[in-house]
Structures are given as structure tokens and as C-alpha cells.
Image (tube, rainbow, N blue to C red; front, side):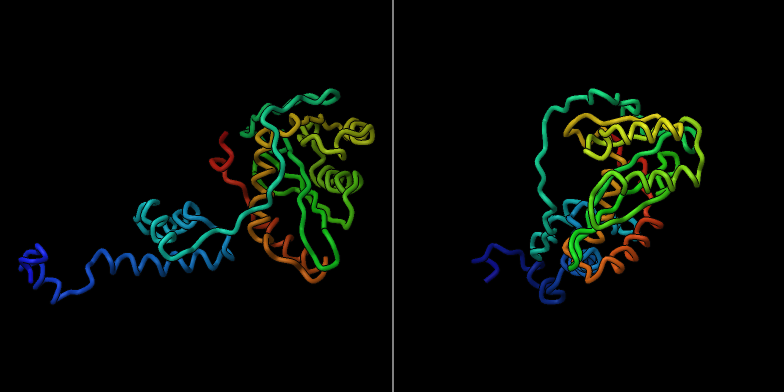
Length: 251
């Protein structure tokens, strides 16, 4: 039989003693860890982030091995929300881009970034406006509401100003309608803030805040809260614990 199958006799007897190879046993062990990481992320993590989870746990497997095992086990990450993107962004007419993607700052309150993200509830959309300090990468203040309007952003920034009382801090945002109004510019001028604005359709100009939105959606994506109060309680936990790593936004 070995001669017909062109298999060495030593290999055949070795297979009789040990039908499952060390490599297959290691694959089975890694697959259990991969499933645990995948389930803990509610099916959001792909092979790259599962690989980082394993590395943090002390495993030494390669990213390609993780991708192969997930593909064989049919573990596929859930797709994100699709939005329209522009390849070339135009600078704002009224507010210049003072930040210029300088996301590493030397002291607290030198530069803040702000943006609005969305949370789904059975009562409708919940809009979350946050203000992040680029020095610590932590949320200074945030505000939530059932409608998206400029008062929501002004409330979050005003809380941050009252807490930190910064002199001449750059406050960077995208070209949303909340940030292009006269009320926003007057608010920044009266509170000694220097407004800065990204180019249109260019998410990399505000990459740190976009990264926080990504972390938030990892917790809330594919999940619909029963009430706005439950959503705010969960987002509060995420906001207080989340810190954007500096390497994560290197563009």
C-alpha cells in the first residue's frame, strides 16, 4: 500500500502512532483562541485585530495563519457602514486648517478635536458630540441628544472650556454644518478658541476623532439599544475607558 501511494513506511507507522500532527493540534488550539476573540468583539474583528489580540495574549503565530484559520472556519467580520467618500478635498473658505494633521502635541490643551457620531436606539437616533484632547487622547467632555444641531456641539465644547479653561486652544473639526455657522465662530472667539477645519470629504485631516468614532462603533455597531438612557450609560463607559493610541492614527 505504501508503494502504491508513494508514502514512506516510516511516515505511515508514524501516522499510526500519532494520527493528528503537532501542527494540526496547534491549529486547533489557536482556533479556539480566535473564536473567543471573535465572539468577544461581537463578530466585528477581522484577522488583523484578532491577530493583535493573540499577540497581546502572548501568542507568536503569524497574521497569515490567523487569516487562514478564520477563512477555514468561516469567521468573517461584519461589514461597517458605507458612506460616500471624495478622493480630493477642498479647504474651507471661512476657517483654515490650522492643525495640518499635527496630531502629536507637546502639552495639554494645545489642540482639541471634535466630531459627532451616531448611536441607534428603538427611540430613534442618538447623536453624540465629543471633545478630545490630542495630548492625552482622552475625552474631555461630551454631550448627547436626540437631534443633530449646533447647540449639541456647543454644549460639549462649552463643558470642556469650563472644565479646562484653556488659553488659545486650537479646536479642530470637519466641515459639518454645525461648525460652519457664524454662531460657531462667535463661540470660539468669545471663549478664546482658535477654530480649525478639515478639508471637505478628507477624513484623514481629523483622523484621531475618526478613530474614536471607530472604537465607539465597535461597541455599538449591529446593536440597537432599547432606550436612549441605556445607550448613554454604555457610551459613557466606552468614552471614559477609550484612549486612542498614537500609532493608530499615523497617516
